[in-house]
Image (cartoon, rainbow, N blue to C red; front, side, top):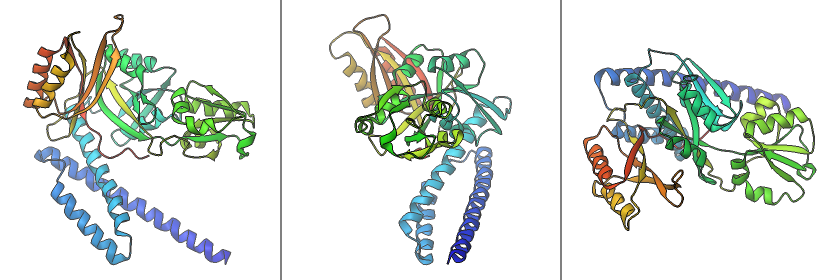
Length: 383
C-alpha cells in the first residue's frame, strides 16, 4: 500500500512539473505577443478574445471531467497575469532606463518582510536581477531614492483591515517623489516559533504595529501573552530565531518562516480573511503611460476654508464622469485644524478629458498636486 502511494505521489510530482513547464512556455509566448503589440501599436487587452478563450476552456474542462468553474477561475488568473506582464512591458518600453536589466528597490524592513515580497512580485519578471534593500523606516527608504542609492522604493499605503498608513502619505506630501506603480498583496499572517509548541506555551508575541492591529481579534484571545511592537514582521521572526526562546513567537508571513527556519503554529490570523495591503512604487521621475493601459492618478488637494469648498471640487470630477476610487483627509503640516485631501481617480493625465478636469479642479482648489499617473494593477494581488 505504501509503495503504491509513493508511486502516485511521484506521478503527481511529475505532473506538477509538466504544469510549470507549460506555464513557462505560455509565458514565453506572451512575451512574444507583447513585443508584437509594441511594434504594431496594438491594444493590450482584447476582451472578445478573452471571452472566447474562457468559453473554450470551460468546454475543454467539461469534456475532460474537470470542474469547469475551477478551470475558468484558473485561466482568469492566467489572463490577468498575461495582461499585467504586457502592461509592465509597454510601460518599461516607454520609460526605458538605458536598457538596464538590474534594478535596486528600497523597502522598510528586512529580508522576508511583506514589502520585500511585494517588491519582488512587482519587478522580478521585468528585470534580470532585482536587488531589494531594507531600511529601518519608510522615510529612510524614500530618502534612498531621492539620493540615488536605489532606483525605486516600495511603500505600503493602505490595508483592508488596518486602513491607511499615515507615514507614506506624509512622504508623498513632501512632493519629492512620484508614484509610478502600485502592487496589491494578499497578507497572510502566521504565528511563528522555533518549534511546534502548543499555543498555551507562548507568553510573548512580537510583530509590526500594523500586523498587530490587523490580528487584534486573535491576540485578544491570547490572555496570557504579552504583545510587543517590533520594527518589522520579518525582523520579529528573526529575533525569535536568535533568542531561541520556546515561549516567544512572532506574527509574520510564511515566507519569513522559510527564511528563518521557523515553524508555523497557526495561519490566517487577520481579522478579515481577505486581508490585502496596497503598496505604491515611487521614483524621482514620473512615468508616462500609454493611453491603451488602464491608469490611475493620485492627487494631493488643498481646499479653501469656505463652506462647500470640498463639494465644489468633487463636483468637477463628477461632471467629467471620472470615477474617484479614494478620498483621504490628512492634517496639513504646521497648520492646526486645516486639512489636505488625497484622491485617487481612474484616468490618465495624458487623456484630454482627464487633463481638462484637472485644470478645472486646480482653479477650484487652493492647490493641487499630481502625485503620479500610473498603471492600475490587474488582478487581485493573490500571493
